[in-house]
Length: 287
Image (cartoon, rainbow, N blue to C red):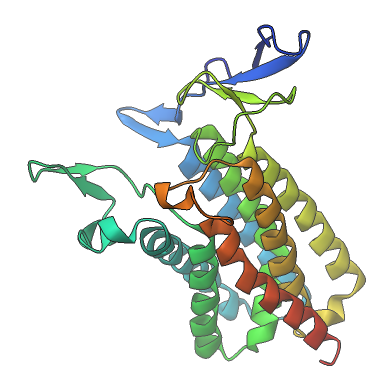
C-alpha cells in the first residue's frame, strides 16, 4: 500500500502559503503470499509491455514478418539490463565493483563477514542501458537480416515511453532525488530526509512522455523516414539534451562528482547528443 502518497503539508514558514508534497510510498506495489512485487519492477514491466505493443503495431504496418519481431523484445531487455548494470558499475562505482566483479552480474551484495544478501540490481545507468540496447539491436539485425537503421529507428520511436515508466519507478523508490528547493511542487522524500527537493525523476518522466508524443507524431506524418536514422537521431538528441539540463536539479549520485563542473550524467550525455545530431543531418541524405 502507498502511505502519504500525495499528502500536501504547509511549507513551514518559508514563503508562507505554499505547499509541498510529502512522498513516502511503500516500495511494494502488491504482495502474492510472501512474494512482493516492487513498484520499480512493475514500472519496468509496464514500460516493456508498452514497447512490445507499440513496436508490434509498427512492424505490422511495415509488413515485417512476424517471426522477425518475436526475438526483438528479448534482445532489447537483455541488452538494456546488462548495459545499464555494467554502466552503473563502471561509470559511477568502478573502485568498488572492480574489486567485487561478481556483484556486477549477481543481484546480491557480500557483507564484511563474507555472507551474501539478495538486494536486486541496485544501480542501473541509462547511458549504459542505451549502449547495451544499441549493441543488442546490432546483434538482432545480424540475426534477422533487417537493415540496422530501420531497427534503430523503429525502436527509437517508442523508447521514450519505456524511459518514462522507468523514471516513474525511480520516483516510487525515492531514488535519484533532486536538490533542495523552495518551489511549490517540491517533494519531501521522507525515506531520505525532511527537505523539500526537486522531483528530478518526475521532470524526466514528463519530458520522456512528451518526447514519445513528438516521435509518434513524426512517425505518423513521415513514415518513410524510418530507415534513414532520423528517429534514432531525434531520440538521442531530445532525451540526452533534456538529461543535461535536468541534472542541474538533481543531487550527485556519487561523491566524486561533487567537485566536477559537469557531473557524470552530463558528460556521458554529450557523445549521445553528437551522434543524435549527426544522425538527423545524415538522414536528409538517406532514401
